[in-house]
Length: 189
Image (cartoon, rainbow, N blue to C red; front, side, top):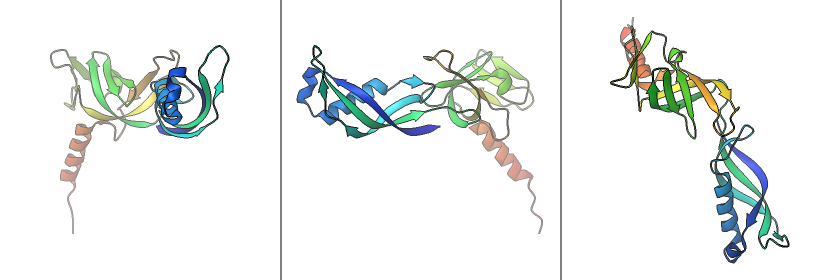
């Protein structure tokens, strides 16, 4: 889920940048420092959206740089258990598929791709259901649910996904199901 957080922090502005507009330099430095930052508390920092407050700068003897206490708004993505996410298949292997869900990739184990026996084709780099004939390939857009989150490695958190629930799966499968259901409905007057 995407959040806009209000954050307070200190930012160091080097002496050479003190000639420029302080607000612009502080905003630039905040974005450089927070863009791509990840923690289990805030999730994945995407960008600083607004600078709310800047205190007067303090110069520390021997450093020459100015330090500013700032308050700003930060756009962050924090995946949550049971959240339904939209994504795009980026890679397929014999054990499952990798899905880009924004600033990170999640993984769908082959057993969680569909309610069917699934086979892997190396030639086409696809996963295919035996009875349903559903095919999952690179660049397919899909809906999945987050079923596992691990922050053991803070630099590379792991996200486990499933598509084995109603209304989840590749978007083209969902459209096909919808069309088939429309054809089965017979109106009686």
